[in-house]
Image (cartoon, rainbow, N blue to C red):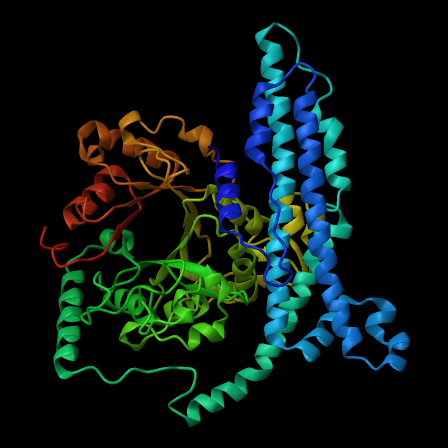
Length: 580
């Protein structure tokens, strides 16, 4: 299964009916179209008919969702406006989307607008994926038709499905400005109004927290003296052990989810993906800490490994068992984790890294199917460009998401990867739907419309960075496994076959810098070391291990770095790590 097919399958499985409209979302049956494209019948009638059916079905469902959501917006205006004033109401005279949403928030409240926001996000995501599925299916058909013609000694057809059907896709509301592109702009308006509302309440909330111990920050009672002593002893051991590492090890060892307790109930170390877990690692001298991120309902990027917080929450309840993308930041702030901490925001962790020192950086992992995080991630770095200095790597098993990030960095004129990037975010309002996008990724033109001005920021010691002269250039890596399985529909590659086919699956001209591969014992054999070094000549390489199967020990990490050309090695820094 290809990377797009895997991504589309996962997203469609994770998407539930819209709570705002109670309507089901529709996703193009790409597997059906791909199968028909591979068959490549002589006249293409079966493929053509199926393609038209998928376009009609996805467009009809998009129109139904969009019309229903828009009607709810207008109902809010009519319900909140005296009848005699309706004819001259600005929102009704001009149909200004911002005015509509402002009235919606005033009359219905923030929670209702958040549901509207969520509905818009998922609808735009489905439209983007459907447009891309229909586009890729046409490309696949024409490519297969050219191969079939060559096999029988004929020249490739002068006209193909792309030429015949692509105009129909571009004219549909799934793609057209009156549909998905317009929705992208409205989504941005809702996002901005939610942020303005949040900013207005921030000072009041801060004062309330300072006045009471029962505010949004929940603190569990002081640890017992024995627990404090255990924590102190554990961190002293870690700091003393780290002092024995060389510069190369300090720069390549990656603290997996921070310096955290592998046992969720242990008090010797901070809980995983907490602010303390990262600060402990960086404070001891480790340069890199790996984290997992998710986007909340109100587009805040939070540290979260699982789909929900059931495993880590101090108390069971509705919030702990609700998936992260359906929680607001306020929900999460009210939900303490074990040890009395709470899931930190990505921006807070990056600011902490900036305060600790130049060496402190994050390795950010995005879970498969989590394409909705790309837009808020890009917006975070647009607002806080200096924080991009604090990101060493962004990675995911989902190569589609990684390509999305690579394209987004390019479109936003942020520093690219693989030697690319402009290094400056352009001035003024960027309507990126008008910018050229490499390849055939038409859906990016649907997703990249931004209504807000992006400030001009140059990167360097004296113009927007944190003063240490670092140049933000995160590596974009695709996580891989060494064996295929039904549970793993993503990229596989192995040292055993000399990483055969990797260059075709992951070409170096697409903005992706390399791979974060699964550990194999064969890597340490003489022949394996040669293959690893050859891989490292073309790609940035990281290695992850699966506990308890793999040997998470310093000696093997050093061999991977010193003799195999590996740049990043994940570790949990368990008690036996250094003694090896």
